[in-house]
Image 1 (tube, rainbow, N blue to C red):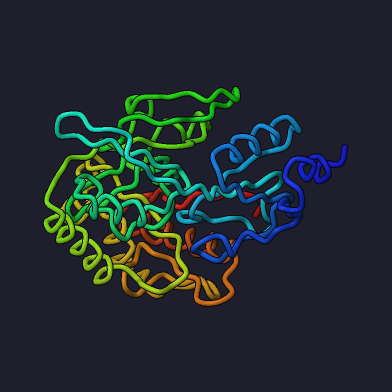
Image 2 (tube, one colour):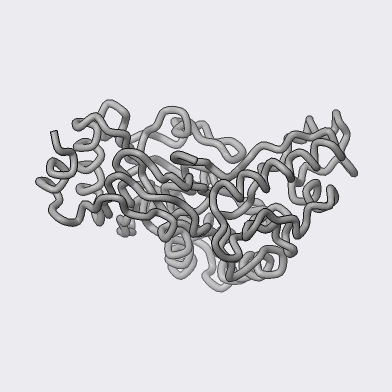
Length: 317
């Protein structure tokens, strides 16, 4: 069986072979996909996943390309880029407004839409990179003020590993810090319904803009980076070790272990925020991994903490 021919029977020359993936990520790192398809609608997304599974090849969904380190040898199988983009008002009940969003929608686009509509619940996420699907997968967060994407999820449409499209409630995701159940179940989020509260648009823009300002003041801007490298440590661990002032901040630990501006070739620890690794040119995935291990070792030696990665590694290294 010629897999490329089978895929192109369905989607024509929109299916590409050996497509380099680095250009689709914020890190600008990553080798080729055996087969690549850019799905523009939910129907195309579902159809492509089902076809890949029928052909018995690995299927990977690529969203906004953040929080991701793709191996230098790329991804074996079928990479489907999720470029779905619909946002619609679903209904109103009491003070809640339900907004349905396809999972490929860029988070910044969604946040701007909700703020402009006077709907509260996601305004603190302005400036969050990546897609809605990725934000739900990771239960993305912001801390000034504190807010998790999962806090305002009402329900979602998913494609299960058995190829069933079904509606599931918020509880299905078991949201926690940097975690959702679909990290283990391999369900694919197709769309999400958010339950948002009516609020004054001007007040929401103040919160949204303050979040963006804080990001600009504390995080590297205009660089190639996937976001935070390491997860913050649990409070219980910070108390039991203990860390300085019982801090849970991975960035503080990396910084005070003397890791700022460490580098392996073009992979550098940011001198703005130590929990960010940036690609200053032609860094490879191997460069990044070597730098991560150097950082982890220094933090472990200095503070007795073994940092867990927030970056997700995908593909062959």
